Image (cartoon, rainbow, N blue to C red):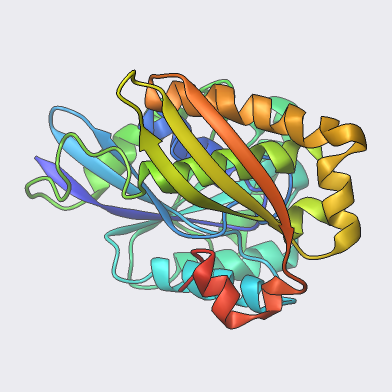
Length: 293
């Protein structure tokens, strides 16, 4: 039996959450094409007969420009410590810059065993893969490199096998029935935030937090969920609500469908959009909204 914690790190939009979801076999992290979708460390547990892999999905490595993004970077840094293995996820489709090489060296050349997941190979020329792998090795990145496509499942089983052989021997570190360390309440808020990230453009979704006010199940089995959608500016509130409330109704409808899949029951969802100006630079609000190191 082998088991261990694997920190999944890399730049924003490298495909970390998508890869973790595919490896775990369930959606434990929300996904969108926008940077900073993942704001806190989220565990996803893969249970097999002879091994257990506990993935720690982390916020993308990103230049901090407000107190929230600073907290996110510290969360990623801390998550990379005291684990059994590091999986550095790199977006192969984006090519490899000197900055990428520097980050890989920082994380892959330390004491903790490491591998690189070179992602999104389904949307890039195949000849670029060998060229980039060669560049990494010539730049001193000597750990194992796995070209993968999480979307198509290419190379994922090979990566899983390698990871299962790389974690220490020992008993399971998490209960076999545990899929993630996050509560249903947390997941409900993340589902709502994901739909906002997917629906709205520009700065609006980045300045949104979601807080669940109440979450209960009635005797007839229906769940009642009430949540606040927090934004930073009055004009952002207007955009989120939309003309005659159409925008927020559409986002809420999509969110409710995913909530019902998560809970396995019907959901009655109520939402309220509120403004907390510049909340991403206000430490107490950052903490209140569930983001901490």
